[in-house]
Amino acid sequence: MPLAYAALVLIGFVWGSNYIFIKIATAVIDPMQVVFLRVAAGFLPLFLAAWSRGLLDRAHLRHLPHFAVMSVLATSFYYYGFVAGTAQLPSAVAGLLGGAIPIVTFLTSLVFLRSERPNGLMAAGVATGFVGIVLTARPWEAGATIAPAGVAWVLAGTASVGVSFVYARRFLSPLGLSPLTLATWQTGLALATLAVLTDYEGMSVIFAQPRALLALVLGLGVAGTGLAYLIYYFILQRLGAVGASGATYMPAVVAVAIGAAVGEPITALEILALGLILGGVALIQAGSRRVVRG
Image 1 (cartoon, rainbow, N blue to C red):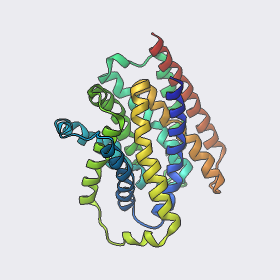
Image 2 (cartoon, rainbow, N blue to C red):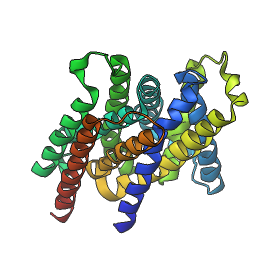
Image 3 (cartoon, helix red, strand yellow):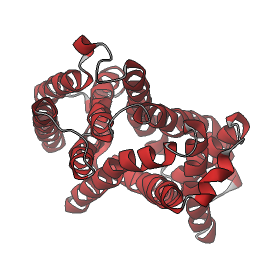
Image 4 (spheres, one colour):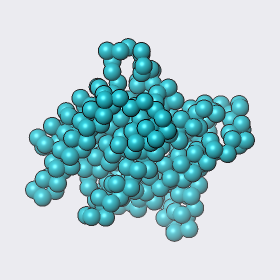
């Protein structure tokens, strides 16, 4: 179990840094192009690793519908929502909004995962985190400082990946396939879909921008996609859907820290929202440990 929590921290740092990499990449090319190149960069090392270890088999094709659903929920649509939204928001604000993922996971678990039914501590954690999300979005300001469209896109991506945690736990974890196999099929199908949907006009300009290219290929692709999926499935198997979803709160801390470091204005409201989100993390994780002990 200590290894699972170490992985929880690691993926928090990987996901938390994604927001600033998105800002850098979308300053050069459009969001769909960023998503396509990100998935392509993440898929290649996953495929090579899975193929070299003999973890890809034709027998897996019978699970193709589940892989396809996950490719949309946890890759293509999820990534597009976050990229399109973050392009319109400060990276710290986008990172805080990403903390809504456990709320969706909590509600979906109530319906579909009876064996992981959340308890009162988890519910309190979700409620506390939700207040932090509302303070971050600031709906009462109606676009004065926070773009509503950006908020909507990040929350759409948040809802998508939140549902994916529960879907994977119910339909993929019981298959007994390795994390590398699952991640490879998922990203491969997403790449095929994105290859059809992406408009390639003007995309080559990023190859003349080394900073943006490195942020996209290494930051978002290799680390933020390939490595992140391996860690994601490992945590899911060890901690369960609700416990693993706690990792999605941690990037908020990293995103705010990076935002402050690059000169984004961090007000008392963001600090309060961050404190509420951290409180939600503590409550959700305490509730998750209680379920495991029970």
